[in-house]
Length: 328
Image (cartoon, rainbow, N blue to C red; front, side, top):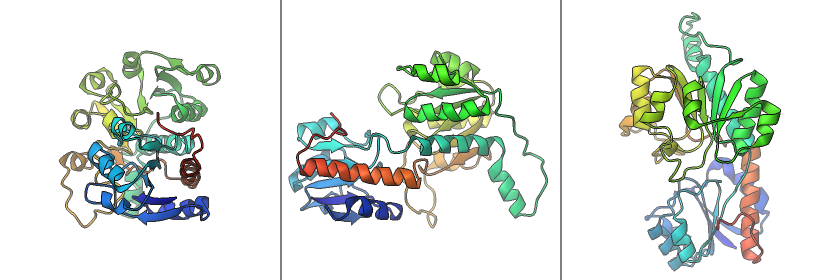
């Protein structure tokens, strides 16, 4: 099946080619899918897209006009796809529901530890031959209360790791995982109690109408003075302007983010340019903030799993087999 692979990155190439093994004609397109590049899918029956690609209604209608019948997402989330329009146009959309919960969970823990022990500052200091320990005092993770918002596959792995540190864990999720309570002493509670009692809060939720800005001014006010906030899920789970205000006042003591509300800058090298995003620029001025560019998923294991599932989805479409990863 001839497939236009948008937003292809160098780190994906070998995994996709290996998983494909010559079965499908993959057309690698480094550009993101936009109104200006949608025509590059001409002559293709399918496309494969990343989280940065724009599958709004107008682009989907143009894709159908070009003959595209199938879309394979190289991601679990699909908030960048207008699913109502896709269904109305009879364009089938499949995703990668799970690639490696360990990759994202471990990155969340990495952000916690790096912020706590001032690893970035310490590294910068020593490279300037400053070996003073002033300003580098952290805290023991053991005994700290961590609030886990979302206990799906990734949140569950986070709880497993934190259990090893000896943390007390509070959790909020509409679906409770009884095994986490039994095996790791996770206590399910209200979002309000979680915000009030947690020293560290980490987000592991999909982005929906209900979860957008789940961290807002009201909930930030409930949080402990100096709380650590970690987001490796979706940028719009957090009202970033309110987080900036709380960082300025000191109410939020640490902030680790791998995702951002406007990720149009992400996945590309903009180092020669002037940063025009004032909110992101302000975030980068805080020494108690770590920003990574949506890399939490980026492990060899995750990339291999994404590639295998993407090709499997194409196989199902081509041979008209039932696709378990189809978004209904």
